[in-house]
Length: 567
Image (cartoon, rainbow, N blue to C red; front, side, top):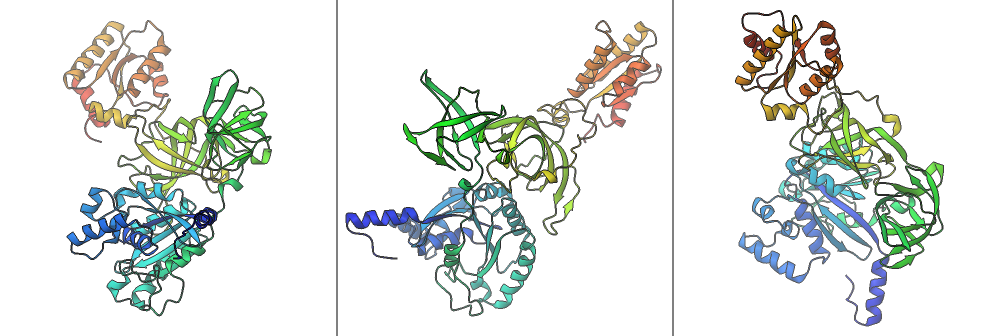
């Protein structure tokens, strides 16, 4: 590194040059214990990117464990991480060289924390994939590479790490290059580059190694300094999701938000979505100052020429027809499932997209991706870390672009409305990929935030309509009440529906609603009414004429129909 600046002029010149440097956002990915934290610690140490007090603290902690220096301690800051020797949370580290500035995200490799890896990779322009030279290519390595490709990271640098543990042999390095190169070549990266390294010893990280003469390429740092910076968000079409309408006094009306992509300038003609009203930007404010322009990812306040109706969730775009986003409530997306509880297609989730939060359902699971073959596999649902294509329906239209065209307006998350957990991350696909979404079979009616599976888990049983033939009102009513009593005594939430005062149609609708709420309904209906109720796609059984023990018969029917017992 060059000598530190001394004079005021030298300091100012240093900061001016530093400000002009390109910024490259990186993410380190790979399987657990492949050495990602050690590599980042080595980069920070060898580029003088750590403070003296940090270095002294790491030396003290390393000596207690008998090591000269444990480079992973520069990034693994959580107590649990140091105890287990693994990365749990995403750690962001900053360093700089004479040519470029870097922000590097160290992501966990353990399969349990794949959700954290996806978060860390979502803003990166390049990924460093580490593979343990002793273990070769693992499924988690494939999963992380596939997620990186889904997130449209253009450049992948594959470091075959721990070469010191295989005596730096070319015979250990080349099979990994062939196997993973064939896999990564199908993922759509712009560049895939391999480097044999030892993060612990420093071989080919910052300094070139003489112990691997078969490799004559750049060091890892040299390669990172040469990678092209991905296309900037300000070169894309304007997308300005409105976060808040500001009206501090009668003389000021502004709309606060973050420029998701593109550039907005004072004087631009813009369109407001969804109203499609056209107006002009008369001012751009930031901390009380007026700007001539704002670009992604700046957070500013826009003032408009006309008093149009604009509120949170609306989007401001340039008034050029070719630059408008799609306005849709049905679209296909790639989904990464991030929660231990599997996808439940019978319930509604909350979908967060830019500044909008809407109810949404996964109408169809199109397929899951087999990470060994990259082939689509038909499945009914997704479990933790599964990746695949789904069809989504939202209750309000969204202003979306394909994720391949715009990361900001092509991304969304799904949230469980009861626990508020983020359960999935999604990427909107091109319109041509949209399938004909089908509702899940047998669901029927409007889906709520509570699914039949959850109701069954809470109540201990499923739901069904047991139809008592309406042969003589008094006798049929007595049968219904007797069955209700018998089922209730056996711990089943059941109710008799016999009153026809509100009309036949209303009684059928009430019966259907109660079944969807998880209740066993014993209802008195004639043959025509029973057929009409069955048409509402709810579980139904018509009891035969009176037998010796209606209660026992009802229990037998519920057991045979899967309403009772585990499922």
